[in-house]
Image (cartoon, rainbow, N blue to C red):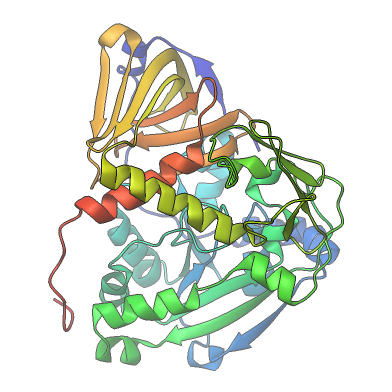
Length: 428
């Protein structure tokens, strides 16, 4: 999938019309049928199946559907499960760019900025549920999983559940991550995909629980580890490119501690600083070649990197200071390439400059609980996305820098800086 891009001076970008909020449309049954038909080949190739739990409590009533986000396959899976139920869909602004965005709006999609506070989105969701009388599909992680585990969830989802007052359904997939993992450069693997669909709470159950209890309920539903599932169930993936791009996740060598010298290629992960090499076996586990294996389980390696970043933050040594290419989005007409700039990330948050000093954007470390970072974004390159509800800044690092580390640092810095909220015994 690609996104419409054009070169435009920064001063001209400032003159572009801004995104205007529109009430979500009731999903077109015709378009939903087309999407279901288009999805059929993928559902057949993946031998897709799903199980249900407590769904009799939902029936045909509009509900909030919370689905984990693994790959581009997710939307097709959702239509495989819920069609012909009508669904409004919460979608990122960049995904609704261009002509495709117009079709997605007719399909019932409503745009929002990833990891940006958006209070109008709550009104849009209410409108879809109570005025359009449709269910709402939402990916609470917002971004695709990097290491096969849950992308950090925002706190306070329980409060949203209380405000909506509808049944809540979770969809957790198995195999979708392995079919098309984000790090693997859009290379499709042959693997069976399944899902478990569960009503985790009815309106009556929601009313009896505190916000914290509801958050815990969502956390429990989204507690998964795709690489552990593959290992424990002996799911064989013998694709000869299975380690391609693995350095995007595992950017730091546990042997020599050098960063950004790793390379995932074929079935091997290699550190070009010290020469150490690991093989990724058909069950997704790593084994060092003729040496000690520090972390056989990829999420364990990822967690170790998180601890390293946390230590840098606590000791005051963390710093990302890089030149970047900058694209800006202000509406649904694609993104504008304004040229080069500079991005700094430290304990004070992000600072982006460009356009000969006319662009000067700062983002607080408590602005968001995580970071919009992505691999091979719209087939352009690895990206760090920052900004607000007016401007989205997509920064493509020049040279050797890890967008994964930037995400880890954002999450850990948020935990350090965010004031602790008092415990909430019930809804406000």
